[in-house]
Image (cartoon, rainbow, N blue to C red):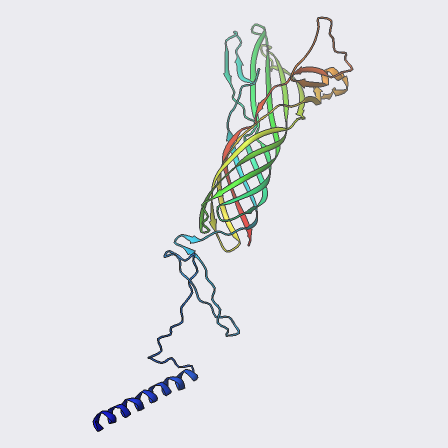
Length: 351
């Protein structure tokens, strides 16, 4: 009985001492080994095994937690505005043939060689400036403005006619040159992979074009007179005409496949493979330059000779005539302004 009482007193003493030590340590902020009340770390519901979290301590020594999501191939893109600038070159797409626009050679005995030339007004050097907004890492929209400095398309007629056998001949060289220019507005939708380091994407949308082009005809006539025992006598005359086609608005479709390469937090370099499908039908043409043998002869042309208006439909009767004081009339013709090419540029992100 005494032995049991003694053990009870010892056990009570040990228990009181243990819990008093636990209370003392807790008051000092020391965690007891016997404290089974663990505090739980609350993990966000969007946590996944392919992400890691970074704990950051601020400058005031106050403990804060900032979760930053990282992907295996780069940081995930976020929403925000951006601007960009690019330049590139486009090749023919959807080219066409134009009546009379051929390379043609006629020799002195009448043999003719003629080659057809395919033309696309969309070929040339382009400069683009634009901006947009990414709704999230995968979808966005942009509005771009593009200026096309069109490449020239040239055909040549070279013919030689004998005027007097063994005595004189006439050589005719006529060059026809088409040179386009185009200003475009490109609203597009962006579909992106959502990666920041190496980010492939696609864009597609419509193109509104304000186009024009010139047609230049330069003719050189060389009359060569052969005189035995004397130097050849050469007489050269030249004529020149420049006609400008303008008016109307072109509407087309553009599509782009590209890839952006991150340089730093705000700057990236990109390369794009671009396709434009568009045709243009001018409303009128006006002769703006006309010289005969080097002399300006524009004033000698009537209004009818100088200007032509183009229409979808023409109505006339056998008695219908157009006076010289009114522009001539003709049916509209569509010209291909399609292209396919490569653009390189820089993009600035505002996040």
